[in-house]
Image 1 (cartoon, rainbow, N blue to C red):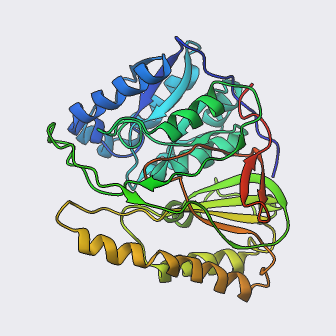
Image 2 (tube, rainbow, N blue to C red):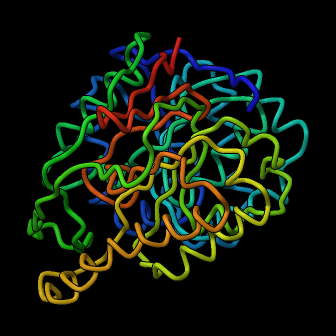
Length: 357
């Protein structure tokens, strides 16, 4: 994997731009957006501004160019130090047909922090093609906009990753998580069920490995495969792949198809390790039995990982599952292209260098 440009760190008082590059939830659920904006500003001491189309609704689906224009406007504005996506969705990939060499050059020549998850995986790969490191992180409305507040592990991850030039160090593990639905159009909906968890699961590997981080949401990694922003197979050499699944809850069987595709492409033989985020879910307060059934399937994802890796002769490769990133709360931040170490003996995952300069 080629060395990526690291953006400048955030400082108190900096300007952060919000963008809606996929779904239009920020415009359709303004109270949720404003809550996330307020919490992010107050927690991290920055000032948020919206790009011209950030809070629009139907226009965003009808005009992908508007979303791309917002992203480019934010990158070109020297006063904007970071770009925060509002929410994911399922069609950010449509922006790609409007991107030219000039767009990639603008990104490369104006490096700054870019934050997001889920469908935003496509944007991360756009930035990676331009040569810029970005950050798989919560969004304004998911993770940063939770009505239970921004969880402490997430706050500390943001501060260590974005506000400091020190090496990030060992990644934390939560003792509980939230995967339940909140109705964004109901200001009084404060119910959030905490589920206990036993932290990271080191399911395979006996030797310490290092590699540069690459990955994202499984559904988007599948959607992007074969496009101009998907890396060549040899670019996966000596990387650590991080993967998570969305609230649409793809089955373990679907996950195994994704893994077999990576094996058939030659990706599995080139990577040094796999980090798997806690599978996403979407349950109401009345759906706790369904939630229990879904949680019981988590071990099936582990089984699929072990089975497919064995099929491709990678029983040696460290695999860690049940991690705190993706469609779960709390979330830690993962920086693309930054050197990371998996130590299966001491059961730690550590980012060995700084992510910002």
